[in-house]
Length: 293
Image (cartoon, rainbow, N blue to C red):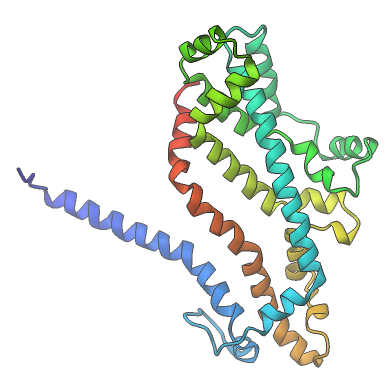
């Protein structure tokens, strides 16, 4: 049976479609602009004013210059180390802490939860954090960007809520069979919470990949700079001279513009490629973590 819809409903749908289409354009166009600019001819790009709807000519010189820059290669290596090691530590500690806080028979559970949530709203600030990192000898080390941020309170609460939704009968059955808490966590709880685990991996991975602020504070050795900090120098400090060496001053300026866009693409595309693989878990994982308080 076909349901007749009023003209108001149809008008509402049209407005929603128009707004969503505009949102898609506003979201996608900056990425398209950077893509087109990165493969455009540098002379034509400098002369162009206004919006960019297609590449102006075609040139891959900017990408060649980017990958010849040792700072980009080292930045990639440092970022991958922070990403792999950092996300592994984040996920392990978050899962263990969430499991403990989700157990209803843990002494002072509510107190521990309150103290952890308290840190989301009140913290010592940047100066005490720097002093702690300095006193434990982590300054000018990649570990300074990993260990102080081993657990995110927000992610911990999401995972804890997800674990609380698992029936207690599964844990009781496992204990009857002789399983300890580690066995229950890694063989029962985590396999049943894969959507939330996928969301945690995505959250932590994006955070690690985009991190530059604390790296700029704790790292002084340029060989330890992550990719985003190298990208910041290129975009803000306009340090593209090393990638356009051998060209005249005018040509360096022209090539430098396309190099900036190419560097943005090199730093952005990898994390964009990861998202489709965890997207199917994303909504489900967040909703599971938000059902119960």
